[in-house]
Image 1 (cartoon, one colour):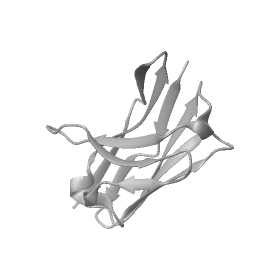
Image 2 (image 1 turned 120 degrees about the vertical axis):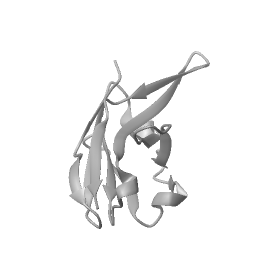
Image 3 (image 1 turned 120 degrees about the horizontal axis):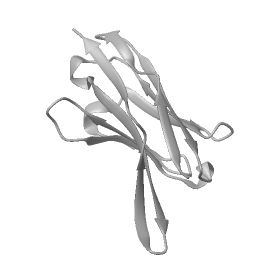
Image 4 (image 1 turned 135 degrees about the vertical axis):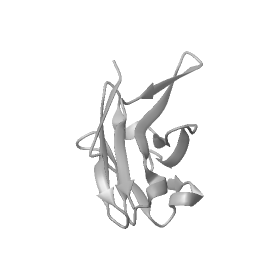
Length: 119
């Protein structure tokens, strides 16, 4: 059974930093592409960034240069390092992975962790 558990959210002032963690289980973590999404109040969930099994990353334009994703394969954990935070970054952050089985995609989400950036 695939499980994703996020942690590390909280309240931070504008310009501050936070590091989110997502611990995965039930998968061969080192083979997976891992995503971070976020959903702000009243808005659709959006992709923040992604890291492939090979370590390649890409990010939404609005977080480029401020956010970074990395993994610890020994701990089956993906991190989202967020710096220079802005009030617009306030959202619930989710980690996500998609796994294919018998030709069908299956999406897995964590429970989310709330990040609040005060102005």
